[in-house]
Image (cartoon, rainbow, N blue to C red; front, side):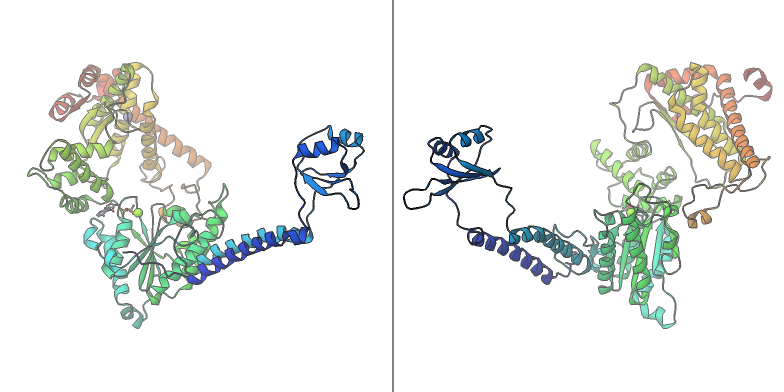
Length: 627
Ligand code: ADP
Ligand code: MG
Ligand code: ZN
């Protein structure tokens, strides 16, 4: 249950008083106005005024824009009555008045008296200042929660009971990160043990990793394990309407945290406020973030870590962070929360599989093997998708088949049967995908091709060739990388051969192929011309530099040219290799493409049977094929 914020009745009373005062003043002015402005003058309709003028009863008139005051002719012994009327737009009036011998003059717009003037000038600023003070004040002290709490930190507060629901047992596959965080838990549990021997306690721990890998979950688990209060706020929530509010929120957050120590302050999406000052704010709005960031830095420097407040933060874009955040005494400890490996995925699947009913045939080990690159969140999603499919198929328990389909859904986005391709498009897509598969099957380092489909999935892929590695690969040799590039270019090569032209569908393939070739040259030192040098800046300096956009080391123009040439060489060689293979196996290419156009999906044994027929190009034959 969230703790209610300490309320500040004094603040509420103050605003009440101000409103009361303002209301009182207006009442007073209304009551006093007859005295101040003299007795009120009887009003008559304009028509009556005109009548009176025509009947020559009017002695004199003062004509204003919104009022005409006039005096009737003196009657015996007493002055004529003074009346007023509201004029209508009447250009004839002056002539009429003149005709009837009325003495008339225009009145300048009423200026009111000094008192109303001063009130008019003074009251709006007073109200403005009062409201402003109220909001700013709420940011600094406590205040009741409500629609008005603009600067109030939106930190969600969990007490022990709630955070304790999440423990390290709920997080799997990130063992290194857990091991590092155990220390933080120990400290929060018994800070004396550390302070006694004079150990310096980390103030800030930064969790770095791709989205969905469990950073937020880990932070909650730390609070849960230690049994302390957990304040969490997302960096994006700091982005505020007016300058100063974000900074006030940070101040307020830390004030509350100090009151509830020992506790954890968790700042999610730190990059939203912690963007490097050098790169941020190009389009304005940088000031506000900078103030917020400065306040955060001040607060982190300001508190004594021995009171038991530890700041955790998470980001998936560490390279954009302001280097000042990473200095000693701030987020000087960084914990990598990476995508899980095979055993990690198995452990995560175990957690979520417990929550659904599994059929006998489900093999979690195999599922883990088929899902490299999946994050914890992806795996959770996978189990859920599988359960949904099982329910839709009226099954009592989730079967392996459901998982298989769920993997495809998570991999390639949801099936979009409704989005129809034209026949021509379908043919191009079919040849493109078969091209990938036929080149891929011959290449070293290529993953097994499980499925070719031309049913569009998601937004990006029109068709796709599903390749699933059976193991996690950490080491690939040059031939394998070249093989992957050739496979990526296989789609475009098929389009070239069959249609003698290329479509836009291959752009993503080209991007990936070029990237990989560049990495071979600049990072892995696989070019004979350029030698075993790393032309890419390492991660570390890039991390700390002020957002330098160029990841390449300073190289001479000559070297840059050589790099470009080598990259081009690798890609072109691979391209030719793909072309050779497909030309050499043209009949098979047509046969598989025709088949897939008929049934949309080819997989399993049928696919393996077809792909086994792809013949490698012998060097002697290449000469006349490649022309
Ligand atoms: P991040 O903050 O890194 O983007 P989250 O912690 O928000 O990721 O993860 C989203 C959800 O995915 C979690 O609530 C949890 O259900 C699941 N999840 C992610 N990583 C893991 C993991 N390592 N172990 C168990 N569940 C995980
Ligand atoms: Mg998160
Ligand atoms: Zn492609």
